[in-house]
Length: 324
Ligand code: GLV
Image 1 (cartoon, protein in one colour):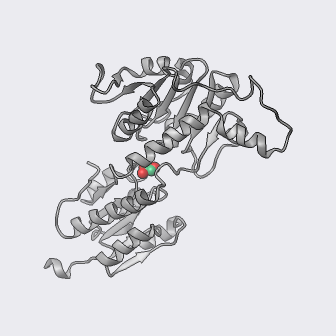
Image 2 (cartoon, protein in one colour):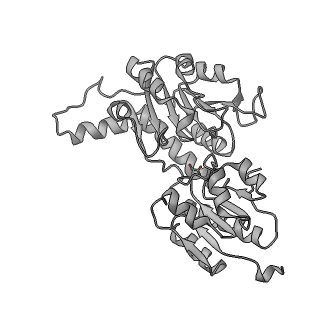
């Protein structure tokens, strides 16, 4: 069939930002668009059925059943996220469907938010805010809400040193922190900028703040479990802006309660969007609702990159950012 008459219908599971929506309508006439809210599974199956391309977000689970329900004409699934644990990439590959994600465009925003959480947890911003809002009497005191001096040669350990980890390290160095990192591609040595590569146990035992930036895979599920938390420095901090499943929340709650950790900050949760009540009750824990990449320009760029991937695949060109 000549390419001009090929199916160019698109399913967009959720409304994207204005900049991305404009790009989508400029590129495609036939778009089946969901609302701002995540589609139900039935809506997802109905929406994806018969289209040439699906643009989805991390709240949609594209497992083998959904991929099969889409039909053989589906050529590309473009995830509006860098993480793609919501997509069964093996099922997609078996069905000869290209899967793309949005690496690169969200590095700075995600590193900014991760570092904001580092500061918020270590300098107890949310506890201070809560104290004032409680309308309880308070007065300045030398022992009140004392936290960690980041700029006193403290060490940030970055678990998963990819693009976002490197952007985070640049921010940490501006705060005079030492940076340790684990990376699949490098086990030892020091980068020109000072980042030192170590193994995971050394990183956990030597860091004042551990930032989790690994993708969620079967190998990283509960990477931070009770033994890993016990290996961390007593009184250190944990920040997770990767995926909830990487941290065992029950073990984290125990570590916060026992004082093994002085504090933590989470942007992602094991059973998102549900949040464990014991996390809500922990005073020394900062919580944000999976917004690490939520910068205005960043969210436009993520949507547009997903759309450009679809444009390329439907035009018979290689995708810009395939997942494999
Ligand atoms: C957000 O969590 C992303 O993976 O882009």
